[in-house]
Length: 305
Length: 266
Image 1 (cartoon, rainbow over the protein chains, first blue to last red):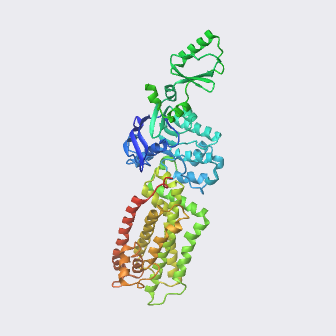
Image 2: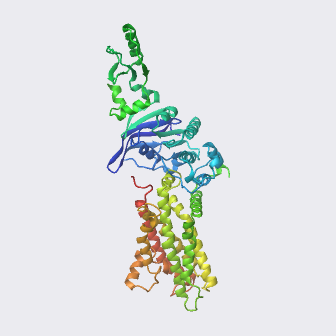
């Protein structure tokens, strides 16, 4: 078994004239849960589909469990499970029938009852797929993806459109699989999902990876925010590691060393006898990272400044 | 069966795909009538109710050939296009392709159910001809079976290609019109051999995938004109079977080139 479950080097992918993926590189170790995070159109689905063997790369090198996902398809497929972004189920079959058909197409499948129980669809086993709710449908697709107890799991936006209960169930299933040693590559546009599940995250924007690391790493690259309501008649101080901006009566600092700057600020407020009303100080969240990237800079560029 | 015994195998995959299409056919009454019942009705209409007269066996064999040809060219072909179009639209083809089965297995599996139904219809109509209409028992069932299988295979590959331009199963009515019309214009399918000028018949024998079909079925049923017995019949059907096989290879290559596994990007 290869040490690296996934090895992507400078992947490029185009649809006709449109370049959807423009030089993406990352590696996923065996047993890791890796998330590709980004808005729609960032290139996440194209990337995961290249790894699934559904799309071909225009350039770059891709290795899944040490092999080429298109050429070595037959050898690889017994070890992988796939959940597409959408679709893949025939509407008129029941839940149970869908699983039974798919068992015939899976290497060493779990039993029907076992897998329906795993995703919580046992009470709905006689219902036609077209009558399931969106969340139930996604859970059935998850069941089919894990039917063969795969070593490597590809999940493309697994909880999109799910109600909160289905989301929790799905997160639990994914966590359980991961603790069994399954390697998981997940794409999502939900920040809380990446924060809750992923060992490491790559943020994609416009076909490139903007930043990569653990959720904590990724977040600390961006400055923390300190903010309070503008005090009357007094100019806010310069802080040693921060830039200041005043917007509609609120003072905001972006600080690269929040602890030092906060201490400086509190000293200043005490020396001048000022009460800092509405004071907040927080690390950047993934949402900030995403918004920041979408607003043109990459977080990596910022870290280099 | 324990999990360890359920290894992935092509046969198991084909059975799973066969089962899926069979289940779907049972759920869809309109399609079931179109695929199972109507072809038998058409077959009986073409064969007629009169017992075959002595000396008129050749015309009788040609009627059977035309019945089988029409069933495959209209009903089997159209149904296959709807199957491929629907599975593509539902993204089932894409999902299958992300899994274990090979591309060829997926395409063959989707066609397996209607192919088996067509084989059953062939046997039923043959039995009707022999038992009710007093046709002679077919001399060379091997050639007939091969012709029927090749015809089903050809309808599969051609339907796969046509489905690439068929957006939905409803659209199949329109997109299959040219191909069905072409097949029906082939001598020996709708109109009997001899109804067209010789030059046209020769061209169509070579250039229509169903060109030799009628002739092979007739020779398989009654034997060769200039020979007698099973071996002669086999030998005389070889050219026709070879041409159909060549068409199967060509159309299969067209499938690898033109088949779409997912709908066009919006």
